[in-house]
Length: 348
Image 1 (cartoon, helix red, strand yellow):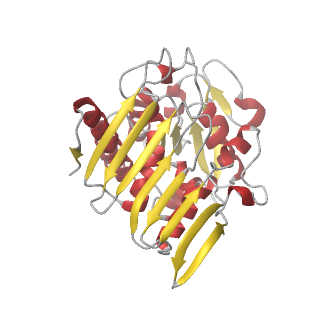
Image 2: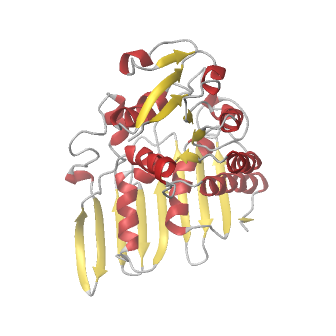
């Protein structure tokens, strides 16, 4: 096994909580360089890596095969472009880019330079989503008539100094958290026929979108995606109704909170949820009525990188294809247009 020599372009929350721990437990990867312009936080957990202060030091290193662009959104396009033009594979943190035209350009650069390009849609590996996927694959609800997904938080203050609190209409929860649940809906149901979105600024003194209500219209049903920073009492994360029954899933995936306290995803029983967090199924299955808990399938974000290794070294299919990430950005752009013009936008 030849480890993939890797560089992390940032060591903020995404580097510390999401990318770093997965790479740390997988011998298929070797973190060679970490970009930290002001601090040296990474040397505690990754003493073998060299800290650099300029992105050029990563680009110029011929030994680096993979560059993880986990920087603020407005750096994604240029850094991914430069890395691929230098012949390196690239992982881009979500959202892929700010505009779909930039995504198309990056995909062409990847093809031209014969490198892999993917986007870190780790919420495909949440236990709750994996369980929803299995419930639907097995037809346990009959024909789906309604799908609702929430990604809510409680943050009633403005975090001054954060780039997420200022900027244009592509800053805020629509582009920060929206890519997660839009991507999940696309995985489950594919491309919608039309999009309707309502975006709001609810917090006192807020300057960017902190609430959205999106409907992806599929003809036979709508997928409703909701997010708000002003939800203190959480309801179900997933609510799905079908002709035979319903499935409700409370709680959010436990992985993020474990990673924040420096637990690693190679622990036994990683991603397992306590029975109190399991989803409830009430449905007719093969002519029999069932009402009860469904054990959550354990999630593991490290599988994203296991798949990436297999794709780079063995030619396996990418878990997250850039074409899928492009469609997510196109849907977010349709949401902006829908909200701006107060209408439903056809998604052709």
